[in-house]
Image (cartoon, rainbow over all chains, first blue to last red; front, side):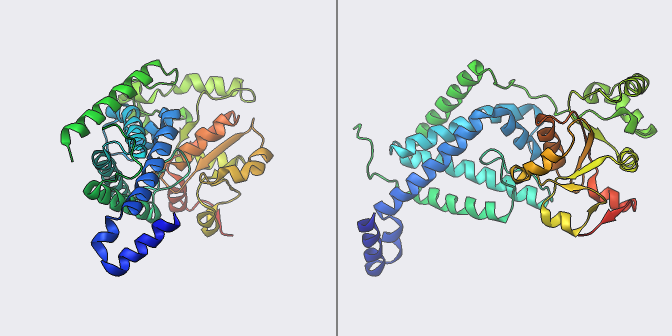
Length: 161
Length: 189
């Protein structure tokens, strides 16, 4: 970890931006954080599908009949993408999946904020209301997933090839 | 980035989710039915009765005459199957009867103004208010509310209280905004 930080700072000094973003340690950190966030979010929702279905329907964006389909499938896509990210399998592709989910979630939150709904986010089970903080969180994760989509992350990858 | 890989991963995840949901005892039905909050029949005005007869299947409103009889006979022991939604007039009636109102909004919003005599149990962070919840009589009627029809925490709070053992939970759907419009008693901290 310390050596990782050292290399990051060194690279910052020599070749400012591009090398910093494509630094393999930084990408590994982003990869692990995103993976854990999505595994946690997925598992939490899988454990209580009805609560997640209610959260989705509170956004009032999807036809009510389709809500259960998303409540059943989305958490598993999150979980699988998270697990594959941890092991470094198809990092760019999984980052792409996570990016598109985050994009949809963020748009949904923005629309709801504009409509003045004060509803539960449904992001990690009960406990957080939608708001600017949530938007900030999502924006950071979106940036992280874009970096992973561009540069990938091969460090401490499960060797299969 | 390989699009076919993305599709494959998504497809496998969806497959896994469907298999899991099929065997999960708490699994969901594939097609969702509308979240129904039954209206307290006594709280419907004439125009609402018309509305409810159009949507009778959806709202499941019991026939007013039936429930009036049941209500009067078993006032003390009757508990609800689920929290029930009520209109402003009925909420005011309950207010005049001295029923406990529960404000599900945040402590800040509560301090800015609330229904007179209401108890604040914010939905976000309700775990810190367990002593308040326990100090209430679970067999008495309670009414939850939030700011208005655009917030859902009154319903969620109502569900939560119901799960905690409150027998008769009403959800005052139109909430605080409508209460103010009617110039009903409020208080500021």
